Structure formats: C-alpha cells, structure tokens
Image (tube, rainbow, N blue to C red; front, side, top):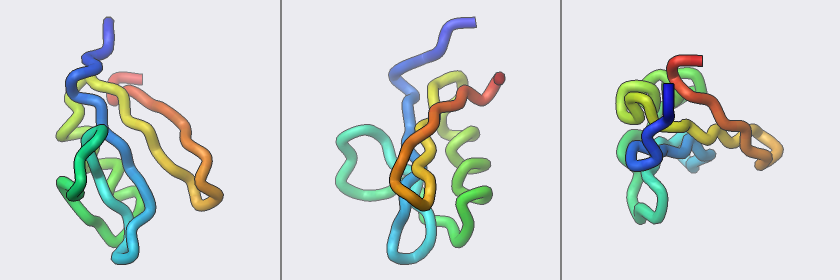
Length: 67
C-alpha cells in the first residue's frame, strides 16, 4: 500500500523526553517520556504516513505503521 506523505511525522529528542512533530512545525504535537511511547503516539497521528525516528546519536530511521 502507498504511504501518505501528508501524514508524515517525526519522533525527535526533546528536553522533556521525546517529541512527535509534523514537518516544519514549531511545536510538538506530543511530548512523551520515552521514545517507545512517542512512537506509539506517532503511529496514531501518522495513519499510513511515514514516521521518521531519531536515535540517540541523531541519526534517523523511517518506518511506516503497516510495516
């Protein structure tokens, strides 16, 4: 199935844990204490869109919720 680029989200490091943000957004949609919790929320927000997850080293990996 094709991905929906309009629902693309990022999980990035945040001073209070991990943030879920849309591209070019100034504020986070969600801030979670753990990366796993942020990824779970990102899956709900993204639908079929790609999720770009930042690791502790800053490198990103991309998943789609239906992988």
